[in-house]
Length: 89
Image 1 (spheres, rainbow, N blue to C red):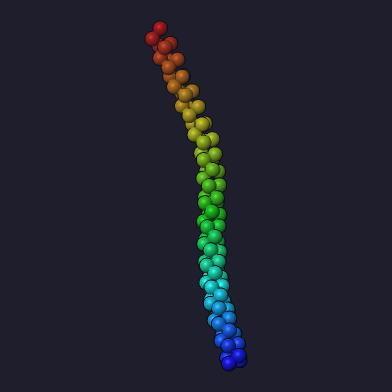
Image 2 (cartoon, helix red, strand yellow):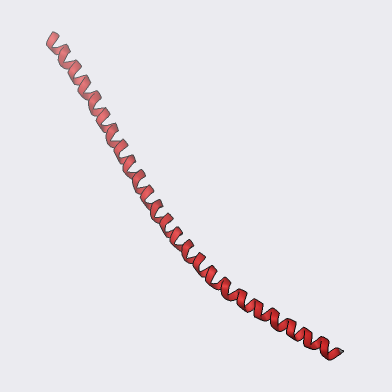
């Protein structure tokens, strides 16, 4: 009978160990899934940073051209206004 009780305890411990190993497997799967999500987020962030850099460069390029055209427009407007004032006198 003592041997039977001992075998039952060993069997119970093995069952408990099997359950714990199964739980470890599930934890490992969740960890892998979390790492995959983080990797996807890193790729998306890298893409957003690249797009942001490109848009910032384009903005600076176009804002320089826009400022030049705006200044030329104001210069033309001021010259036309001065000519109109001279003509009216």
